[in-house]
Length: 258
Image 1: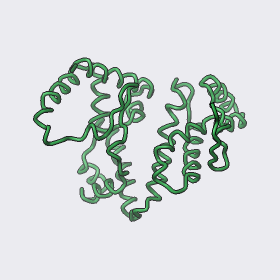
Image 2: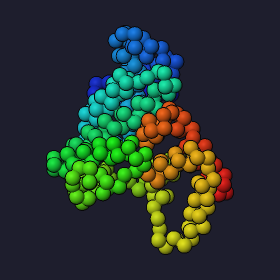
Image 3: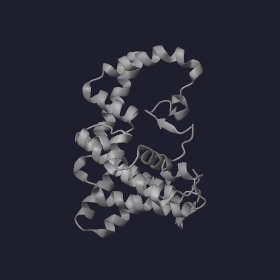
Image 4: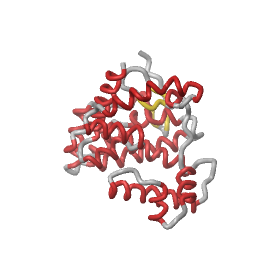
């Protein structure tokens, strides 16, 4: 198969080496022992991971070189903070960190300029939300966040809304190896509301019949909107275990409503 040369930031992507999981684990051991050359090899061996993530953002910026560099910042942070003892694949750990850096860059450089004061409120609200979530072991309301910050509900809601990315109706939101589910599949059609009542009841019953941990993870992921990493930190297990429990729960729901 022909290998096409694509250069980004002066890097010829056709020549990027992809490391196996075993090679990465060995390099992480060397890096943790103080071998800085191992870090460089880890960076170079995961550049294609950065590029694969950037594909979905190529219509969001005119300068992919800048975005590539930002993605590499996320990659380096992931390498510096990765813990071998957790038994998680590096890509599983790195992807959310790379995406986080890219989204933060796009948000801060959005053509729709957001006032600094609103951004400050949004960041404080996100921090307060995280603190409240940990203290009450649940999702805090806008009022609770507003009270904690001595602000009005409107100020908090407006600030958080201003920081949200625009999402395409055709954004993939879940793929279990079969058919991809897109955001448009989850949007409610009022014309078919009565038609869907039986299905909603069946789904609710299926969720109620899940094991407690599966039920909690599915509820927090799909109704509250928490990430797998947030749940892993909250429950005290690895992200890989959260992923397995989530997939098991979804399969059980599917089996109970078919």
